[in-house]
Image (tube, rainbow, N blue to C red):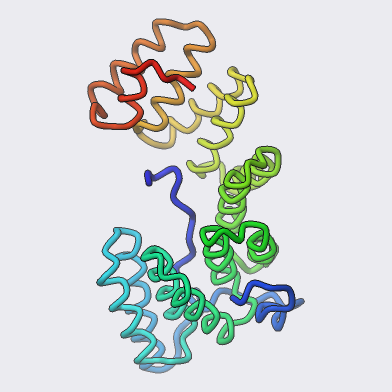
Length: 262
């Protein structure tokens, strides 16, 4: 999985209607992880959780899980520690353990928007896509949540799994409106424009993305196909050369060699 298809997780809920998040309905609650820790146990648990989240991002699941275990052992009431444990279990495809840990996180911090975002992604990855949107919407609607671009982006990714391009596009547009530097959302908006045949819009969005980040195999491949549709053979050849020079081992370059442009 490359960087532009990864979910936007929080620092890291039963999912049926009337689940534990409803206990916080109508109450805007700042994420627990953003609040100042009180007491030695909570401070230590927060430190272990933040460290574990970094290891999770880096793909070091064993250390991430150990940090989550330490955090929850030190302070069994610290919700983000259980959320981290749940996300690590999810990546390990340990669905039952992931749900149990996330349920505990929600019981401890009902209405927490970061946990709602993560739980929504867990549902999406567990084949329960339609249940996930309620949690993404809940996270995004919380006025105390500093990064609502995350759940909108994750909702867009989840709609793509359902092949609902219209709803995906609407969520990616909301994400970009809130954060114009959201690379994931910009990439997928460009890709969706390409799929609709609006190649000029796709190129404009991809150009904006490349102002924010160095091109990778995925974005170069999209750009190459856009230029091919626009008939700019020189630009297409330039992008093909970059793909070959920088990412010769990538699936995208192998698709180029096979002439598999769609």
